[in-house]
Image (cartoon, rainbow, N blue to C red; front, side, top):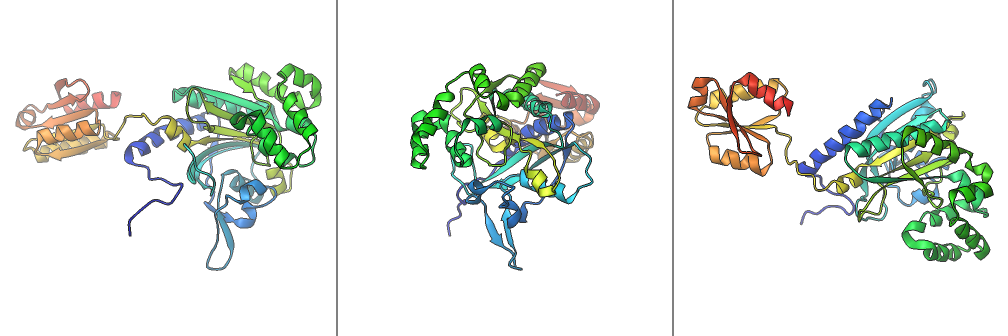
Length: 406
């Protein structure tokens, strides 16, 4: 048998895993900064929970990985982290509201594959449950903006509101209409028109919607005034918080559980067409699961898409210093243990200077510490900066100070 990967999944080699860790540190620190606490829910859920009418809806059913356990119980792999959150809250009714949680975990979708999209991927979700204020929506966008600023990624945040779309679309099967409308920027007006007519929608209704989407925000607000109150409030909060967003009237988000704000974040000037973060307000899902009114809004960062966006990341190893012994193994090991006790990431190579330097260079390890007879006698060791090639003889305390300051 020739080993091969399953379709839609990938290995993550050390360099990319290091990049993943860097991105997660930024995302996790921002979640904490904005008052979110960690939650973990199972990868495996009951299939009836995942396919509930309160969950993802019919459009997600075809992408659910389902199976039976040895007791013939129907189960499935989670396709997002939101349904697990809804189930958790319904089983823990004593939670204080608003409840702000973040969760980072693997999700699975048996769907189409494209650049930056896999069938197993990591989501990083933050949700606010129990708040109906548009400030919660705006604060999520502010947090996302902070994440992308720290990662030095130039993005565009697009926003809309499903209440406006409900008012705009004059048909009974709004969910099917919205699924096609959400493709407007990808396949254009002609493509959407063709798809909607192919679904059997009336040509007058299709033309009405497409023509209205060409109007400005102020024109749409006059025409559909009652559906714009949340949008106005959101945009005002975003302006107050200093978050740049773009009103995009065709933005719909495919999942049926969205009830208000929807948003997607895209890379500027990139070949990647998919969003790198998205979310919105889903006031009914958790309410239906829990049997009590619980408005909610959330965001999900696409970690794998972010890794693709930052694919030129150069760090190859977490090791900060590579210790090289020249016939001074015991001293080298003692020094290395002292460095590790100070929290310095280090590795070692005994006896061969040239091979040790080449190894460190190949993995872009920033420093080498050379320990030979002269160094042992002086109790000062040679610290080489692998970027500049400069060397200094320093005692152990000075070495720790240099390495920890970088």
